[in-house]
Length: 186
Image (cartoon, rainbow, N blue to C red; front, top):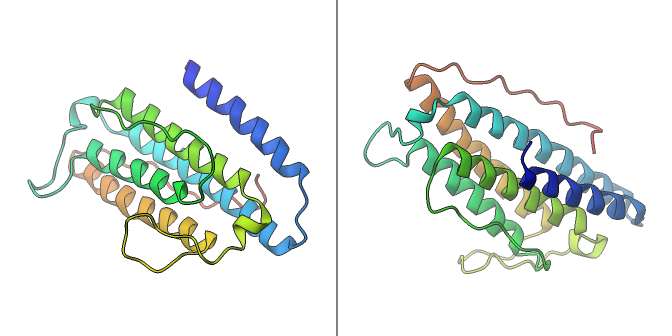
């Protein structure tokens, strides 16, 4: 484990402790938020397993010229995750997008982006979570709820990660097995 991962883990533990101590009057909303966090952690672990499965020499692999590379797909959905959750206006520093897409920089960026989203989720108040007027930045979309933003990020990540799982197969690598095991794990 590197220094960045240790610092990110300490920050998550601190925010997790503070968030779990605050009680919401809407217990369903709090449980839903906690379930989102648990599923997000599973998504992070699976994304990291996908990165680890790809041999270093194939990080620039593109099935066709029109598609993003393996590394480009990972960078894209990591960046988008932060953009979605930045809409909550929490005063947290989002990770910087790396200039290069090496296994090391992408692993760090992906880890930091998932931690950023988790920290935003942990910092949400009941009022934040039940809002129905969250703008989507510069996108010409109607306002969103917290649940809309989470589902948008979750589905967007799954969509692009699904693409890179195919990239693994195209270079002869068996992808890691995905497991749906987040229930009750926060």
